[in-house]
Length: 162
Image (tube, rainbow, N blue to C red; front, side, top):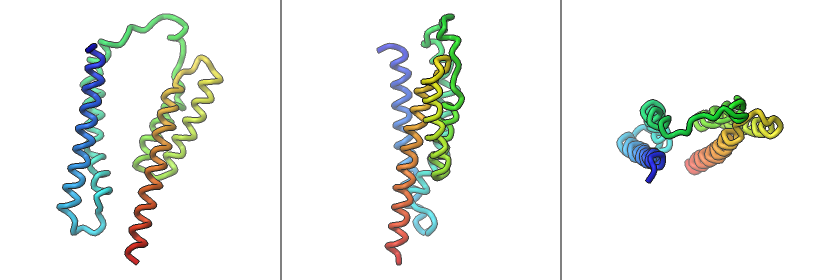
């Protein structure tokens, strides 16, 4: 196994452990605080997500970054190095990720920015970031589907009590 494959494997395993931890902590909190009528399991899992996810990002950005830079190839001084990153693609990814916490409008903004960034990257060969834009679009669409499911479930639960 190559060193960069080891880093990727460590990344995947840690993300799976943290995802499992979010579900377990959220389910445990839902069981303990069942008497609080305004909390449900989904809300508590989201709450644990807001605690665990920053720790996850900190771990992989600050601790593994020096390790990963050793395995990356050295930059070439060709025409590829003169390309610049499409900022719209980065904003698409940011808006789509934040859209998981703020309903609809932020996800929609991320998806629209992703489409705009992909079209800009196709039109201008000096720009790169079409993959980042595609990632933002996928996360944004998944966030929209998730939010529709949560709203439908909450509407069904509210209708079942009347």
